[in-house]
Structure formats: structure tokens, C-alpha cells
Amino acid sequence: MGLQTQQYITGIHFLLCEFTSPFPSGLCRSRPDRAKMVSVVGAVFVALSLAPLLVLSVPPIGTQPEQVHISYAGFPGSMQITWTTFNETEESTVEYGLWDGRLFELTAKGKATLFVDGGSEGRKMYIHRVTLIDLRPASAYVYHCGSEAGWSDVFSFTALNESTSWSPRFAIYGDMGNENPQSLARLQKETQVGMYDVILHVGDFAYDMHEDNGRIGDEFMRQIQSIAAYVPYMTCPGNHEAEYNFSNYRNRFSMPGQTESLWYSWNVGSAHIISLSTEIYFFLDYGVDLIFKQYEWLKKDLEEANKPENRAERPWIITMGHRPMYCSNNDKDDCTQFESYVRLGRNDTKPPAPGLEDLLYLYGVDLELWAHEHTYERLWPVYGYKVFNGSIEQPYVNPKAPVHIITGSAGCRENHDTFIPNPRDWSAFRSTDYGYTRMQVHNTSHLYLEQVSDDQYGKVIDSIWVVKEKHGFSAWF
Image 1 (cartoon, helix red, strand yellow):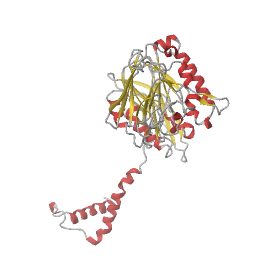
Image 2: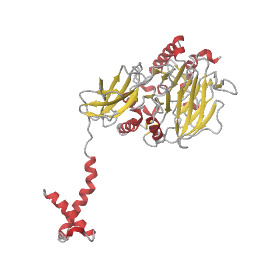
Image 3: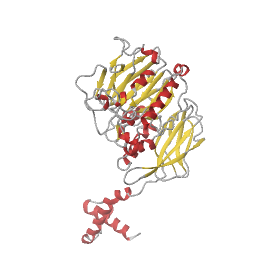
Image 4: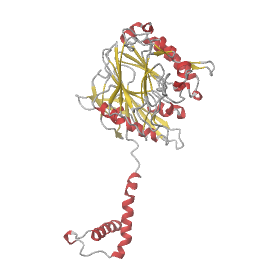
């Protein structure tokens, strides 16, 4: 026994004898000399007080996978698995198998990309991506990811149902942070009991992912793992991702296509979903050309989706983008202005940059999902600042313009936004409660939306059915 260990035990002995009376077993019959023990006891207290710090000073295992999340890779029978390590590993591997089959009987390999955060420390992390293919539609799988240098926990997911008659269920929200993520616990539980097939996070993550040299982003990705490792977590960029040219967003997420997750589209059930970047209209230093590139891509995507055979198979076209075209909030955000950049474009660029409203209307987009405002707002069918309800009695039955939903109240450190006292003519329902939106695409003609208030313990505070007998531009007339 070493001298330090002897002193430690003797010190504990002294404390027990001094402060416990009577003490059993005659242990204190020969007490240590009090004067000699003062310094030993002090050393014991110092050692005990430093113990947590000594434990915390042990560096984490840099090859251990963390921040696991999945996304739809954009083609049938696929799923993308993404995770992070802080040291390089020799391989990036997912071992997986059917839920009722032999555990980890299948193996897929991918690659890792070095991401260097733009902060002063230049922190390095390795983002691993593996694409699973030939999955059995609508079947449950069990998986873990990593390498022989470290494996993740065991997770599960259900491969997307490829049928156009399937009725997928979504949770939709934006503006969720590490601090005050009020809706997170309810979303975690609802995901784990199987309420959702897909998550749509409509921009603004962590607040902000780049802060503390990317550590806030790390913590956010750990925070959502309890959702995103089980259900495809589909995203679009928001203004809070802008630092270092959206590098944390572009590197941490893995969306379909070849645009670093800035804009893309994918099919699910009877819906064609398009994710857009509204931020290209505001951060011109990163390239005005991005506005035109996205616009041309979007036009081609909408043309393809509107081919008669495609629109018949997937009649619902749904867009998601962070900053709304319309809102009745009491701030000076773009959506409060008639000359909204997102809606009408910018005339201060050469050439002038086109907005999105006319293009989405021309190709018969049915539903537009937004966030950014830390509130919930449902609009009447609207185009050009005018309301085009289906009828007075049933405004969302055969509406004559797109329906807009703003759902940016999941919870973050910036708390709530407020509304102007009198809503605009196109504003149908407003709430400042923390919460999120649920959506189910029931079939080719019926789509259901409801808003959940976390402030009111999960109460549904708003709901609508959008019913359309036909889709496309001709549906407006």
C-alpha cells in the first residue's frame, strides 16, 4: 500500500472517529494523533473536491460514434446514416438487419469527410455517411454504426413505404435550440411510440451550431439523436446557420441531391416534397448566383413533377423553406413587408433576382410550409396578397391558391415573437404558444394538418383538412 493511500485511509478513519459517536466494533479505541492528522484531513478534502474535475479531465474517446441521424437518400429502398467522430477511423460501417431477422447480418460501408469548424480553435470532426440500399419497403430494421474503434448504440428505423397509396405522418417545426427546446420532450416521446414517419425541420437549429467553436452544434445533434436516429430527419437551412457560409449545416446534414442540402426534392406517399433555401435572398456575400441556380433547378423540378403521369401519381406538391412570404408578426422581418424578397425577389441585384410566389403558383403548389417567426400562423389560401378560398363555408375545399403554414415555435433561447393587434385579411389563425405541427397526407385528395400546443400539455389548438378534387395550375380556376 502506498503512502498516499495510507494517509487517505487514515484521514477517513480520523473523520469517522471524530464525528460519529458511538462508533461500532471498537474501531476508534486507538485514535490517531489529532495534531498530526489536520494536514492529512486537509489533503483528503482537497482530493475529494478535485475528484470530479479529475474525472472530467479525461478526454472522450475520439473514435466513438455520436450524433447519429438518418435521412431519406432520395431513391427507392434507401436510407442515409450519418454520424460524427472526433478522430479519424479506418472505416465507416453500418451493420444492420431486419427487425425479426438475424442481428447485423448485413453490412454497408461509406466514407468520412473531415469538417473543420470556422471558429478560432479550428476544431476538427469527421462526418461519416453510409447509404443503405435495397431495403424492403415498410420493413423495420435494427442498426448500429461505427468501426472496430467504436460502435454506436443500437437503433431502429422503418424503411419508407414506396406505395403512392401510403398515408405518411409528419412532425413539422422550425426554430428549435439547445436552450429552451420546449417541444423536444414531447416530440421525443411521440417519435418513440411511432407517431411519425418523417420529421421536417424547417430551418434554424441549436442557436447556433457554430457557437463555441461548433460545440453548440455538437450538443444539438446529440439532443435530437433520440428522434433523428429513428425517423428520417429532413431539413432546410435557416438564417441561424449562415455563419462561415452555412458550413455547419452543409456538413452536418445529408439530404438528397448534390447541393449540400441547400435545396432538394423527394417523393413520399402521394406527395412530392421540395426543400428550398430562402437564405440565398439575404446573404448575398455567399453568391448572388445561388438565387438563379436554385430558381432554375426549382423550375425544372416543378416541370418534372407536373408531367401528367407524375402529377397523377403524386398530386400533392409541398414546399418547405425557412422565411415565409407572408406573416402578421409585430417585427420588421421580410414577411411583414409587401415587397418581400422571398415572395417577389430583389431588384437591387444584376440582373434582378426572381421571387418564388409566381413560380409556385404557376405550377400549382398545394401547400407551403415556413418557420422563422417564433409563432404559429395558418393563412387562408392566398396569392398576391389576396384571399382565394374555395368557398365561404369551406375555404380549404378546392382552394384557389396555395395554403401557407408558419410553424416556428418549437422553442429556443429567443423565446416568442408577437403579432400585430389586427390580423391581415389572409391570416386565419394565430398562436404564440410553443408547439409544432402534425401533418398526414391521407390520399390523393385529402391532407390533414393540426397544431399542437406544448404550453397546453399537447392540446390540439388548430386543425384543418385540405381537400382537392384536382391539382395543378388548372385547380385555381
